[in-house]
Length: 228
Image 1 (cartoon, rainbow, N blue to C red):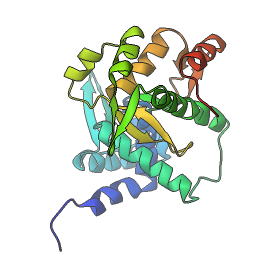
Image 2 (image 1 turned 90 degrees about the vertical axis):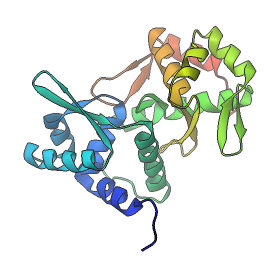
Image 3 (image 1 turned 45 degrees about the vertical axis):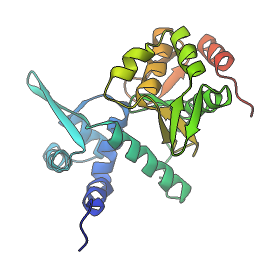
């Protein structure tokens, strides 16, 4: 056996349907309890605890205790990035769930991908930033241009503060529904935060759906135009 990263072990952890449902639920960026994750996975609390223990040991979760409750969240942006990529791969390969929920169209329009904007609105944001030369590709990475930094600062995003943080500033994330890129990293998180601060958009606390108000959608389209 050759030495190197054990992708088979990580894949096995994610590949179990119950664990996959739990991880998907945590893509909202919200920490959930064992009972909440058990409900998401359709298993008993005892079974959910066993699954969560394995995911924690595998480095995919970050458990936190507050009062009498223990909460679980994704361990890092890297985990969310991999999960979103797998969703895109599954969708592109035709592996889709046959039962489509009533909010499926809303999820495709705009949703939270861990802590940044995904769906049609997310890809529009990314495409517009590229088209306006606020972001550019640099090999396999994307970078914020000088003009892009000035644009973000005018939008009251503290770029200097983001650069000092440990998280990557800009990251390209494959959107599972659009099968195109959306913006992840601390800048992606900051943009979503500003949309919420300005009341352009609001997260549904029970789902990953992000709903834009009529005023917010108009302002968003004006600020991030794209050629369709």
